[in-house]
Amino acid sequence: MNDEKIRSFTDLNVWKEGHQLVIDIYKISQKFPKEEMFGLTSQMRRAAVSITSNVAEGFGRQSYREKAQFYYHSHGSLTELKNQIIIAKDIEYITEKSFNDLAGQANIVHQLLQGLIKKTKTFIR
Image 1 (tube, rainbow, N blue to C red):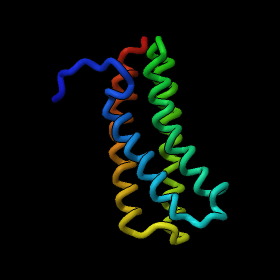
Image 2 (image 1 turned 135 degrees about the horizontal axis):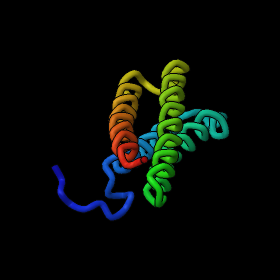
Image 3 (image 1 turned 30 degrees about the horizontal axis):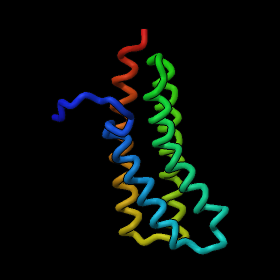
């Protein structure tokens, strides 16, 4: 277990893993057809970025209630992205292997985010 103090949102494991997911989504969506630039490509990128952006914003909030609300928004964006990854697989924009890699990373983020939400809620009175 890492005993270093968390000083920034970038120290949070959920942000680190979410950031990797953002990078993965950007790289894989570069290969999507150009006509998808304002469709699925844009939606997937915005959903992925929203995950880490909401974690960052929640981290910066003062009250635990506000923090939890932003973490819930992050969770919603993650769920949206999971749906879009399935769509990308089903219309054959990504391979089964890419799907499994992205879904696996999304599940890591999901587990960490659930833990962060659960922990944050213990401080709400």
